[in-house]
Image 1 (cartoon, rainbow, N blue to C red):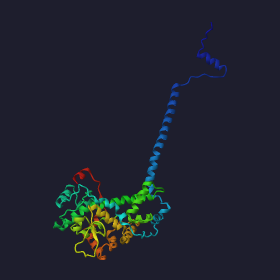
Image 2: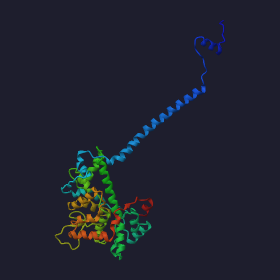
Image 3: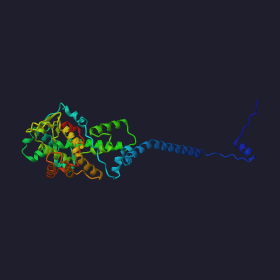
Image 4: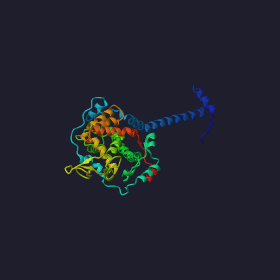
Length: 375
């Protein structure tokens, strides 16, 4: 049988002391505290690393978004744009004749009138404007207008005896439509500059550019010409021309053909002017809805060679960071009518006498569900 020994802590101390060693008791609480601190720092450092990894793409995206507009255009195909941005003399837009079939192709989509389109009478329209709180005094103060989209003018415009009442109603009807068309052009213009500020473009962007080249009659992928042409017509100038061409919405062309700007056509749908000579083959272009007439008008000013000086003057105002001045731009529309300079004088009088420049900085409000139901 083996002999058992009782070996105590005291015996261990004596044994170690003889050999120059020392036995001491470790503090359990201190060791636990150090272990806790180690775990805490490890966890904290891990959180920081994870946060940085998660937030880096967000900061990068934000940085790109904030500074993308300030990046220089480096693509060789954008030399003309760089010259403009650097304040150098601008080149002339292309001289080639436009293809009207391509330029007005997207406007043909309005040939089919929506089945719910009805011609409201003047009193119904006036009540609609009253119910929605839409009046021109408020618009002038608030600089905003509700997106009330009417497709047709009331047939009794000529019967409204008060010229002020008739003018106000006409402006109220076409103002949201002009703003809507301008907004679409502005969005396209922003997209154009966004594309130009990229080194590489997606297939969707290339397809979009190709479509815009066609719509604005631009050949040889001339980006400078597209920039010159893809721009708005000041609201006051558009209203003045519509007022002059339709007698504030009372003309036969406006009521029967939704033609607000008296554009001529030698082929396709149109209304023959009364009293026109037999040898005159032109007609006034006819549209199914007012919106189509406004788009055709702006496309006409933005593409036809007769208004090249108008577009150049507008581009110079843009390059100088100036507000588009309808009174100055009106001088470049002398070829719009046979009366020439006299026509531009009348336009400026209409703008001034009716304070139409008040509407140049008006914005179109987003449509609400309540307003949509009213319309």
